[in-house]
Length: 97
Image 1 (cartoon, rainbow, N blue to C red):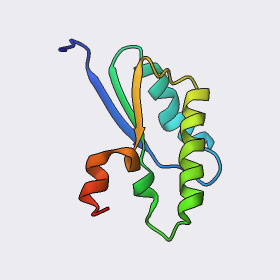
Image 2 (image 1 turned 90 degrees about the vertical axis):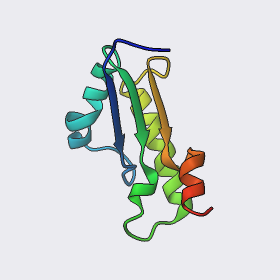
Image 3 (image 1 turned 180 degrees about the horizontal axis):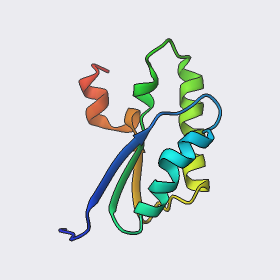
Image 4 (image 1 turned 120 degrees about the vertical axis):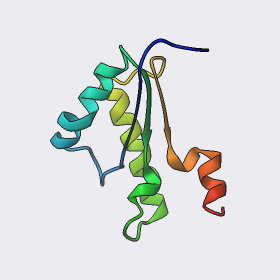
């Protein structure tokens, strides 16, 4: 289905516990605003957070918390598509899992 709307694609790393003011001012409030005017695709880039050793259980919990915080900030699942990198089949297969 073709759309005349511009597209927005962005990702945010799951932080340890909660997003901070910089996340909100720099990205999240723009995500919420752009979902009204753009075909919006947002992801929690959990695999990009593995720059240092991570407990897989903590990373999954932080990923879920980040997704919940995006929804709480106003991201509308019916207006914007969202996912985490680890849930994308092509990402998992390219990583050899």
